Amino acid sequence: MRPIIYDVAVSIDGFICGPDRDIFRFAQEGPVVEDYAARLANLATAIMGRATYEFGYRSGMEPDQNPYPHMKTVVFSKSLELPEATDRDLLVSCDAASIDAIRRRSAGPIYLCSGGAFAGALLAMGQIDVLRLKRAPIIPGDDVPFFGDTTAPPDLEHIETRNYDDGYLFQEYRALHA
Image 1 (tube, rainbow, N blue to C red):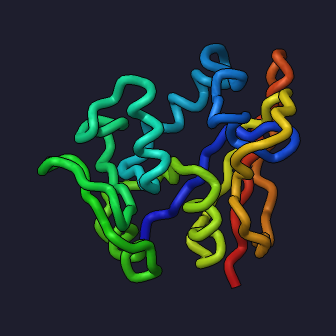
Image 2: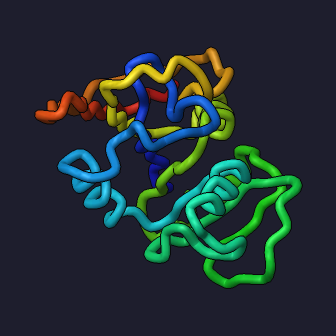
């Protein structure tokens, strides 16, 4: 089965965005963003929740548009209605069977592109295999924690740490599943 990789920018106080879902204090260009884009090029499937998918609308994305054209994109939602499209799926529930089916049919590693609630649900199910943090030198102080309300942290094995000149820190961990 293909691994699920949560590659996320996170503030030093643990938030993936600032008040009102503001992401613009996080790097939008430079080496940390270039490295992120290079990692995405090696992933085959993107999974996300409804709120993350709809966030793309504010950036000009159309309701049936795939935000990652080189990947198959799966949106998990019980309420989102989209026009028919062939390059993404719409699932109504997030359970271990649905995630395992995606892991089996993906052509390569899976990118978890999501806000805290969906990431927290996957974490609680033991479905996140790799955690990649782009630690930003900012403190927004409020909004979406990177694992939502989930309080069941996994055991982690440190893989890599890389410092960037602009104060960013990249950290990669492997989740040790029991």
